[in-house]
Image (cartoon, rainbow, N blue to C red):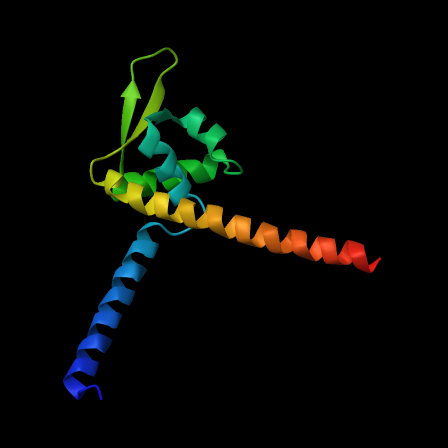
Length: 131
């Protein structure tokens, strides 16, 4: 039987874990930030490159998300001396600590897609047999 103090310690640990998850999700909130970070983990990119790579994002939303990521010290913004002037975004050392998180999310996504696609194929096969 678990002692009351052990139970309280587990509850405290659980609460701390949940709070840390909430803090992380607050910084990475929304549909696009993790994708932007994942792209920048591979190489620095100009605004137009990010717009092309992050499928479905609008320029206005990308601009807002980049500002948020810069404010949280996850990316840096560098104005290039080109004509016309272009801006390059790069993951910071602090932001690169998220690379393992983005990889873990991607790994899970690959497995989930395979699992769900497999289930869908099974259902389609059953539906085809029923007809």
